[in-house]
Image 1 (tube, one colour):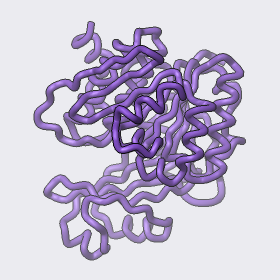
Image 2 (image 1 turned 90 degrees about the vertical axis):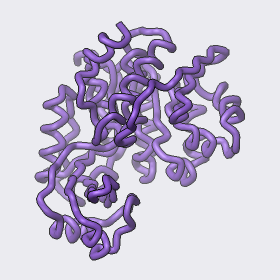
Image 3 (image 1 turned 45 degrees about the horizontal axis):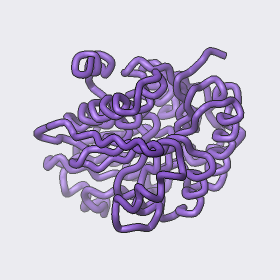
Length: 328
């Protein structure tokens, strides 16, 4: 099997975006600006009443893989879709951006995961997420040859809710380490960390080389109120920690090495969706190309800044050209 720079494991989701008015949200009793988990019946009910919509592949790890490919990295994605229309959309979109996707579609069970994104005239996004088939990933879906052909495996914390997915994470990490490769994980969400704190702590300490998280997530992981205290906790637990702090930039930590990366000026910030996903894409691209940690952090900052300059969680610019232009 050909060599990959990065294999991503995450929720295969399709975003279905439509513009609605406030009355639509009231009719559907949805909290404006919130993300609500919904079952298949409820998702179908809302979808049937939505105006014409645009379908775009999403999912946190899928977004990272899109950024990674735009930088010129060779990537492959592992995630679960159903053999339905949205599953075909997801597969087509991944392949069209240059990311391989071989995981077989399931022929039974829930439909492909979707996120109904309802955009009101004030630019607020109200989201209804149905994980669907995405949450049925099991260790059987972890392709040993693919994992061991990649320099780094990258796993999405959002996938951590079902027990089978937790087992799949450990399976992928063990296979990767057996082949002398590196394992990276993103914490994804402080609520996700709250639900599975002990399991995440074990995953970070026992299986993770490169950790991604934001300030709230890392404080939640170690149950501390202070970012510096969280830094001290994570220092001995993984080889590299990449921690984002919003307008304060980011910190890259590896043993005694500490790099503080300043944010890039941007006015206005249009949509922060996908900032963490693209930060991971930039860092992992630099890392898999053998760059030093500061350079990896600078690329990560640039790719995250690009995605918050427009609506949507995937890059609009050619990131490879952007990096060459801005960073040489």
